Length: 252
Image 1 (cartoon, rainbow, N blue to C red):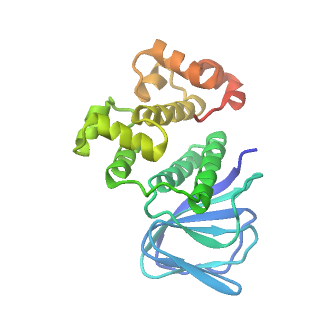
Image 2: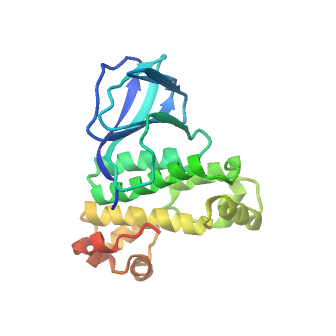
């Protein structure tokens, strides 16, 4: 069962909130400045990259230490190993957490609940692994973190490992091996995942033709796009749009 996003939003300012609570659990990513959350019996603070975890029904209020930016997700948790106790997770050196939280917020605004739930479940699993992995990999090298950030915003553009490696002043073979070692997938696989996720969003949230969706996602050849989509989702883009997507969804 996937987690269900109830709502999300972005905050920017320097005001303290009144005491309040949410029916669902809440994740709050600090994107700028420093802030704290006060709950009965204690408080925690976080800098950029910190993620507050606030359990359902817990009264809390945010205290801003100057100008602060946050992105928040309120959700109905599924049956998951993710711990919902009040705490702060340090994701300041993780490349995936800020990107995924931003993408979930964007999907919410595009009214794509299935995509929100799927990506939210991935996020919760990733946060759980960040906290509990006994033999966790070292934090991402700066070159890989920068590549992930760049690809997340340019995935629909023509792609080559050599071109991305050059941005990091690394050889293509070394960059490819380094990327795979730290993310568990190849650069091409990561780009494909981003492109297909965007394709699903366009199929469900726009009136673009199948050919136009492929072009928007970096696949100008419609036959190749349809074949690739079927390979990874078990149905054609047209069938996904017609309703099979709910059964065929697969973010891998």
